[in-house]
Figure 1 (cartoon, rainbow, N blue to C red):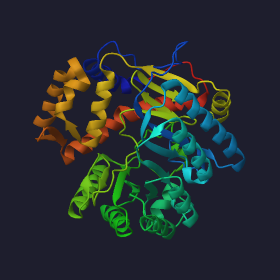
Figure 2 (figure 1 turned 180 degrees about the vertical axis):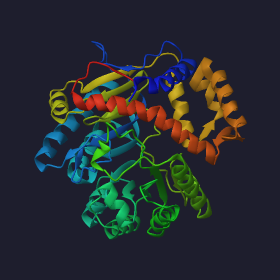
Figure 3 (figure 1 turned 180 degrees about the horizontal axis):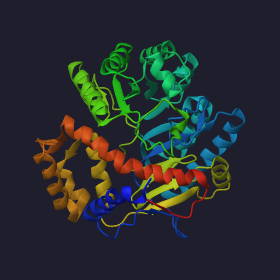
Length: 431
């Protein structure tokens, strides 16, 4: 590829970032400066990363390793030690929610229960516990362990109920396994059951997609999260060359599928709660990302702090060694300058598709007029409408936001995670 091909997008990205956030913000992750420690916090959320997977799907970009029972105990001890490190550092904060992701967290439920006990001992846990799982890992014992650990919200990675689409994705289970797992979770008394479904798959039609939505709802899912196959730039993160049958979906297909999802959900009582998510029946919203602040436990876990983002080392052994020795496992940090924290808040409110206007001044301070000007432009081109006290994205607005998300945020993740995978303690990563 000619290096000049990406010159214009890079220049446009820099200009937009400079206009919105200002020239003082450095878009660089680097080792924390000597003596740096996270600030004390009154409240936050917590993310627990469990890296183990039996089937490491080649499309998945997240930090994971093949499941080995011998690694679970060292992982558990390190995770407990890291909980202690955060509690000693930030204080006995209120934890407003816990999100457990992976990997496949349900492969290590005994471990998770032990870590959660320590979280309850060291913090004030007041919010819901949410967890991800996969169809092949759900049975009656799993359900009992989830309830015993206090899990309230469960997300099942169905992806599709069509055999040919599962085969393309490298998923080794049959649709029947996914159906049985979803039905079991739905009848087991959890506050909310989310089904993850993918669209714009090779050869997938809009009818295939809406049939998946209907089947998930019929089996008891009260939240549906739909996302396209190419959410991440897979050339380096997902190593997508392993799936030789997969090609980047064209914009027309992605647009048609997204429109079909919105239409079906509106017709069947599912309200939009994010760019990708829909729910019904007034259940608690399941979301993996839209938390205003959180601390991360585990290899590759990130933390969103008032003064910036930090990222743990991705290497399991390096993380275990640091955590068990009582050292900071953070490998990289990007400090916030100016109103960066407020702009990040606005980004997630756009992801929610609802922006509360009354909060702009408190969150963005002197940048609030700039934000209002930008939001007014979004309204004028038909991507949002003004409601009582907030701005709400239209269906086209939500679609084009997901494309912008791919270009900006997910390309940042791709750049950062690619380097973090190569070496345990990177020197610096520019995004």
